[in-house]
Each structure stands twice: as C-alpha cells, then as structure tokens.
Amino acid sequence: MSRQYFGTDGIRGRTNQWPMTAELAMKVGMAAGTHFQRGNHRHRVVIGKDTRLSGYMVENALVAGFTAVGMDVVQFGPIPTPAVALLAHSMRADLGVMISASHNPYFDNGIKLFGPDGYKLSDEDELKIEALIGQDIALAASKDIGRARRVEDARGRYIHAVKSSFPADLRLDGLKIVVDCANGAAYQVAPSALWELGATVVAIGVTPNGTNINDGCGSTAPLLLQETVVSSGADVGIALDGDADRLIVVDEQGQIVDGDQIMALIAANFAREGTLRGGGLVATIMSNLGLERFLAAKGIALERTKVGDRYVLERMREGGFNLGGEQSGHMILSDYATTGDGTVAALQVLAALVRSGKPASETLHQFDPVPQLLKNVRFSGGKPLEHDEVKRVIAQAEAELNGTGRLVIRPSGTEPVIRVMAEGDKADQVRDVVERICAAVEKAAA
Image (cartoon, rainbow, N blue to C red; front, side, top):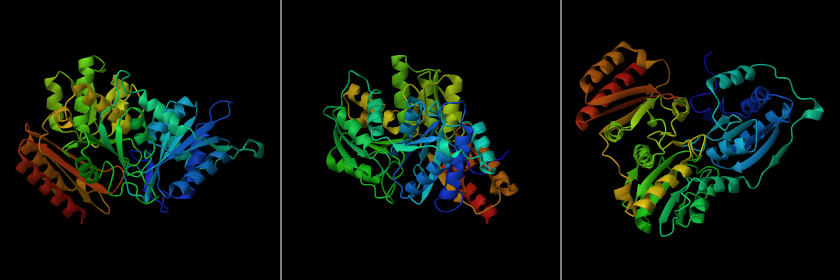
C-alpha cells in the first residue's frame, strides 16, 4: 500500500494547506486514537509541540479527534520531541504526539507519532492509521468521551532525565557555553539543564513569538551561534533545531562540528570505555567517507542506512547498537533515549570536553572530512531520475569516482527536490560531478 500522508518523519506540510489542516489533524487524532485502543483500560495520549503559531490550531484539532473516540489527552505545551517520547513511555500512555516540522520554517508544521514504548511508529502502524483516516470512524458514546488536561511539570521531568545521562562524577563548572535553541521547543529546558549542571550559560534563540522558529538561528543556521561564541569568549557553542532532536556544535574558534564529528567523538569514547554495543555505530548514506575511514582505523564498524533517523533507529534495534545518527545532527543514544535527542548528545560532547581538559578545537575535531558537496534540485512533477540522460550521466560519474569516493542521489522524503551528493579525495572532481548531474536533472525536470 502506498503512503498518502506519512513521510519519512510523520506528516508534514505547509499549514492550512492540505494535508496540514485542522481537518486532517482531527482525522489523524480519531484514526490514531482508534488504532491504539487496545484493551479495556482508560486510554491516554500525550501531546507536545514546538513554538509555531499553528501549533495551537493543530493541537486543538488533535485533542478534538482523540477525545471524540474516547481517549484522554495530556497536553505538555512547548517541549522537545524526545521529551514526548520519554514521557509517553514513563506516563504509561498508549500514544505520544509531537506537533512540529523540526527544522522547517514556521509556516510548516507536522505530526509525529510515538507508540507506548516511546519509539516512532512502524510503517505497518502508519499504514493502518492512514487506512482509518479514509473511513467512517465510530465515535465514543457521550459518557465515554475523553477528557483533556495540561501537565505543568513536564519540562521539569525531562530536565531531570536529561541530566541523568551526564556522568555523575562530572560537572560543567568553569565552562562558558552558548546554547542556541532556535526559538523552538527547547528554549526553556536546554539552558536550564546546562545551568543546573554548573555551566555559565549564554542563551540565544530563546524568545519564540510563533513565527521566528529556526529563523536565522538553530542548527540549520549556525552563523549566529558562531559569532556569539567568538564575541562572548565562550568555550563551546551548542545549536539545537526547532524540536531539539538534532545537534550542531561550534568550537571556541567558531568552527562547526557536525554530526559526523560528534558521532566519531562519542563512538571513540564509548569504544575506549567498553560501552559501545553492536561493534560500531549506525549512520546514513550521507555521512562523510572520512568518518568511515576514521572508525575503521579504530576497529569500529560503520553501518549505513537510508536517510532518516527512523531507519537509523530500526537498524540500531535490529543489531543491538547503542549509538547512531546523521550528519545533519540527529544523534540517537539508545542507553538514554528512544529517539534523537540533541540535548542528551550535547551532554556527551561536553563530558568529553571536561575530561580532556583541552580546548574544544582540539577535542571535538576527530578527523579530516573528505571533500563533499550536496546540492538540491527542485522539480514540479514527474520522475527526473528515471530519464535516460540522467541515468547516463550518473553512471559516468559513478565510474569516475570508483575507488576514490561516493555518489548519493535521492529524492527528498519531505519536499519535491532531488538531493545530489558526491564526495571524494579530489574537490574539483566532486564539484564537477555534482554540477553535471544537477544540470541533467534540471533539464529532465524542465
């Protein structure tokens, strides 16, 4: 069965345009609530959101849908995605919902669903929910309509859980840390957690107004963080995205430390401590070849998956790995969380920094990445990757890079673009390959 609503990370789109409308959100609530009513107990769903203006609309529509089919609703307000996953499990909920479009601009929004175990739903569950959306769903009897309430201490519960992932023998005293919360879901919890662990905190991106989430700040726009770290004389900078499930770090010189470097650091530390499980880590096809070479030199395996943290997590669970992530900054540390958690990953980075006693620029840059270039080609319809000329150009590029690099070409799972990535030891060759493929795709898509 083909997917109509769910993409690689839940349902996402521009608000007040199909499918991200109040009407569909209510139907999702009714369908998901019906699907997860199992047994005779009083069923419960927990709902969190980021700071988008449209979050109010989507939240109220979901609450209407869930209560209409007899589910009680617990609302958290603005809180990170990993907090929803954590609290869905700890509060014995039947379902968790996060309202967020992650790193997208404020005018987009999305709905992410978590099962009672705190993990994102399987493809099977999502397809069953999609099937129910198109059906007439039985409503609860008047006496069985669900109730809704807000829990005010959800952020405190999450802060406590995050801090418990930090080594008990360490503190952050003496470290000056800039944290950029992207005017998003972690604007309260991330600075608080760092302060409670002893750090001197400079918080930016902590004044959400409904429309400034990810706007010139956060992990996808790190320039503000880089400038603030340098100008304030901070030891390190941390940038989260709108729903705080991804992390980018900046050293004291203002240099970016991406997800590949973070995974390399944590994997090497876990391996040295004997806590790395599965024999290695799981990353996606987008991770730099330099990471693979660095890990191989240390006897650490790298397993690659399709792009999307859900695929990383699936492989982690299958193979018994406790570390995985994406170059973009999604970090999954399954000893502490059931989904990507930027704050938990940041604390692992900070623990390494404290233990090293060295500047971030010496501690966090683990390897020299090979030249890599990624470009996006937007298209309006059709399947340009199936065009004969595009196939010919791609085959030629693969032959040129054979043995010295990699080529990854894929359609985005969240927007109508083709992503073209190449990497190799020769920067000029990489650039030439990407430009030729992009030109062929653009011509085919015209």
